[in-house]
Length: 437
Image (cartoon, rainbow, N blue to C red):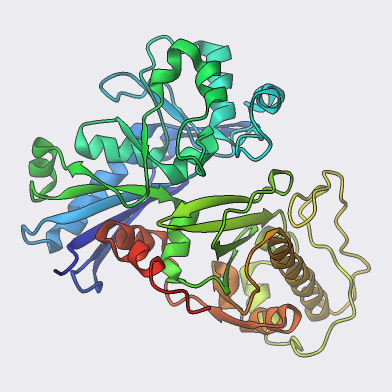
């Protein structure tokens, strides 16, 4: 039986992107909508967005994609930012703006979580949705709240007209125990009479039910279309890359440096920001450094990076011993909140300076994979790269030299594609195949 047509919807910080895949997995259509600026407030530690603006953008994307469906049913899944939280009433109406993943106002709740939660729980920072929930309880109370949700959960609920389920990838930062697959006792005790606001948690890729009939008619969807439990945006990017073996690392080179690797067992090192998500019967471990493209942007614009990249000597070391961090502090592969950046002395040759920065980030990447190996990940044999940094051939050659393994660029790295593959059932099916490593 062929997988269905599938729609993947990626809800990012600035907009919604979508892709429609045919039953054979080919891309039929893509669409995107920017979020209305009026729905975004970012000031110091505060970062809020109006959930209704996500919904408006998502409807626009769906309307464009359904032009290619020709009345055929589709499976639909949504990914969203991990750690972003909103509270709703019984009908799913948001009771406040969503607290975005990088909203830092929940920092006062972190010491309490340190007393409540075990060290391996993914809640010990202000970016966790658990910290945001406790902060909201203290600031505004939870009277009238009937559900706490993440963007992917809320939007999938909006498509179904039911808000009773959450995927376990997004649930991790709300305190969900992914090893035992249950809400932990410490969280249930802490919430007390409000424990019922936690939805049922299901694995990513689980069919949730049909699209609401009235909504299907309004959006031009077949009433037989099904909503499937989604995932986080970073895991969707991993699924888009199509990596299915434990010997391949996936590096995201965006504004920060993030590493992911499939593992036969879960890896947890919360002091380093290393956690593991379930993907089918496998585990996806990962960690993120503060280093990355944001450091490069402190010195060079995109035109400079392209021009200077052609002047580098990737096969020979620059001799510069840099630690490129955007400011003091690092968490992975070392945990030192006071670790200072090291980007001096700066040579007069800008190309050599850029090469030194590239090499410094590559050494952090190398040490990050070594740290995952120390924690129990399989030995690394190759790396696939996502993000803007993958477009630099010189940087890829430098990374291959320093990592000592083959480095390639992902053929596909759009999160919406990974989410569409999750919806059609092929992303997780690939992970159940015998491990080629």
